[in-house]
Structure formats: structure tokens, C-alpha cells
Length: 196
Length: 182
Image (cartoon, rainbow over all chains, first blue to last red; front, side, top):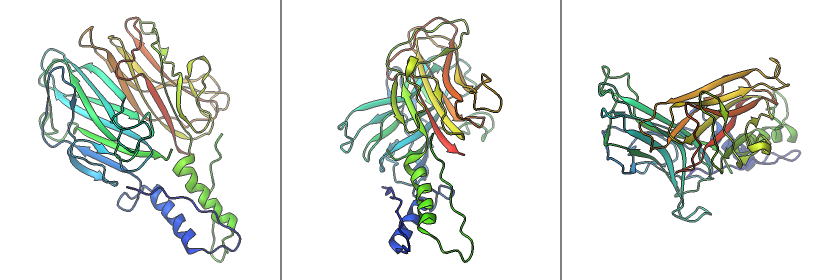
């Protein structure tokens, strides 16, 4: 869990080492120019295996591989928040159409944990995208969802990418179509916006 | 309007004063919890006019607002920028099944050097529906492509082909703007 630093207040002739270190901690926290030293929560999770989204069954899109995770949020399929705040999230999921233009609906789902003042188990949904998945089975169709958490999230709250398909669809990986590297990797990113 | 804190210039030989140090602290406070940020959501369905009309999506419920960006009266959008700068915006908008398009609209205000009333659309998301029973939803966003001035407005507009209503299934429409840089 990242510690939200408190900016110090200085008085005249104040040379407190603790205050200077506190100020340095602030600079480290907000200075996201180098994620290897920054304390600001940020993650990018992605898929390395395909996944079937069954027909008419709300399914967690497993983002099980970590590219970047500065706050230890990865839980194997999504993010478990470690630091209280407001977050900005984006996810992309690519699927192979099944020729009947089934609906593909994606959204972010927050499930509150025990630390949230709303109580545990409260569901909040945001960032919804819901469109036809297309009919051209020779192409991948990528859907991207964007959003900002509509509540302050607390440690133990979970954020997951959810999918609902009108007919069974299978996610695809970058090398499936188009010669390899040109396709969109199914991924889920999160960025700390601010303390609230 | 938020005051953008200015980091002090500390030159060689200068003995940092309390004012200098507090100015640096003010920068940290601004970045951690004080930057302009606003988020709102709809709380009711809204009838939309079809045929390509760009309907402003109303956001009646203010969730966060650190800089009086949320207009409130008349339904909550557009958002009105108070502090000049670069902003990032995100949105999502569920509505009854219809092909169409959705995006963020910037309308300049009197404080913009271009003059008031200049409009631009950005971060649009189009949609082809798959059935008449499943709802449609658009999601998009990114860095607003223009420097924003005080009184500039940002709204979410949707233009369905058919006259349908927004829906509250799963989640209501939402939108956020976040100060990125002066």
C-alpha cells in the first residue's frame, strides 16, 4: 500500500530533516516520471492466454499477467486496491466475431471490500461499452472501455473488467491476426488520480 | 478557480525561507489532492432525438468537484472549466439500442482567445448495434486536444440514429475531467 504523503508546513529558520524528508516523499509520490521509484499507484495488466466468454453469462475477463504494478494490486484476474483514492482506468478486449454480430458488452466492476465506508460487497459499474462484435471472422474486433471510479475506492476494493456476450466469443491475443504485432493486446490499466 | 502553485526558484547561495519551502509544499498539496477534478453521473433516463441530432447528455449527480466545474443548473452538463490548462476527460453512455455516435464536445467561452462559441468534437465512439433487445453503450476519452481556458465548456453528446432514451441498466452515463498541466 502506498502511503499518501502529507506536505509539511515550514516556519522561519526551520531546518527540520523530517520535514525535508516529508517533502521529498511528496515529490517521490507525485513524480511519476520514473515508475521504478515513484510511489504513485499505477498498473498495466494484460492477457497472455485466450479466454472464452460464454453466451449470456457475465464473465470476469482475466487480466492475469503483470506488466507494471507499482502498488501490488494484481490479484490474478484484476486489481485489488491497496491505496485509497480515485482511479482512472482503461481496458481493451479483442475478440473474434462469430458471424452473427453478437453483442459484446464490457464494463468495469468495483466490488467494495471491508474497508470501504459503503460496506463490503457493494457493486458499482462504470465505463460501459456495448456494441455488436461484428460478423467478419477473419478480423479481430477490439472494444475499449474508459472510466473514472465513481466512488472513492479503498484497500481491498476490487476492480475487474467484465464481459457479457450475446453468443460465445473468444478473446484473441496480438499474434492471432494480421501478421503478429499489429493487434491490440487485451489489457487493463489503472492510474491514481488523487486522494479523496 | 484553483491557484496553480509556482515552485520557487532557488539559486546558489540563496537561503531558503519558510515561504520558499511552503511554496514547494503547496505544489505537493495541489498534485496530491488539490488539482481541478470533476465527475458526475446521470440519475434519470433521458429522451434523445434521433436522426443525427447531437443531444447533450445530462449529468445531474455531482460525485466529485474540486473546482466548481459542475454547472448543476439545467441538468449538470456542460462542465465549465474554471482553471486554464490541459485536461483529460473520460465518458461512458448507455442508451437503448441504436446505431449512432458519441463524443466529447468542447465549446469555447468568452475567456478563450478564439472567442466564444467555437466548437470541436473529440474522442468520439461509434456503434453498430447487434440486436434491438440489448442496450448500446459508448465509452471513450483522452487528453482534450486543446488548451482549455476559463469559461470553456465540455459536454458529452450522443447522436443516435433512432429516437431512443438513455438507460440506467448496469450504470448511468458518466463523465469526468481532470486537470493535467497548466
